[in-house]
Image 1 (cartoon, one colour):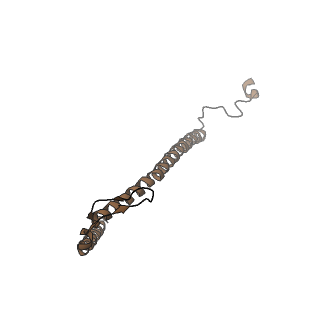
Image 2 (cartoon, helix red, strand yellow; image 1 turned 30 degrees about the horizontal axis):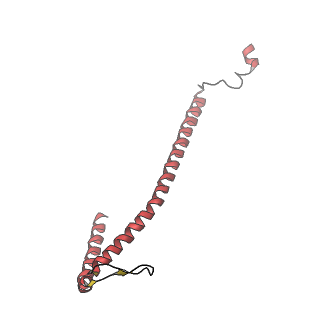
Image 3 (cartoon, one colour; image 1 turned 90 degrees about the vertical axis):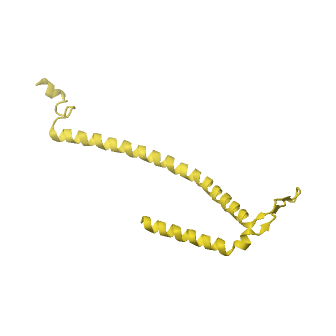
Length: 124
């Protein structure tokens, strides 16, 4: 399985490298990006290669998706903790009931049976 992951990773990186190599002229072409909000003066970024803008946009999108998934992960972790604690409580209850059942089977319970606790039994 590790070899398959390694092969797929190398294949993916090779294809990305091929894509960059074939589009090198476009990615290195300088471009002046501008933002126009219509209520202020437009902001013009300094000229930079198109590849830099693509890397910046990819990184910004990746960070936004990662940060938005943190909330989901924290909720899932809290629910998992709650379910784990509930499971432990159930396991403790099961263990106590099994001990009680084993004691009843051997006849050595710490509690009096219904016959022993009746007032007629104590009179004899």
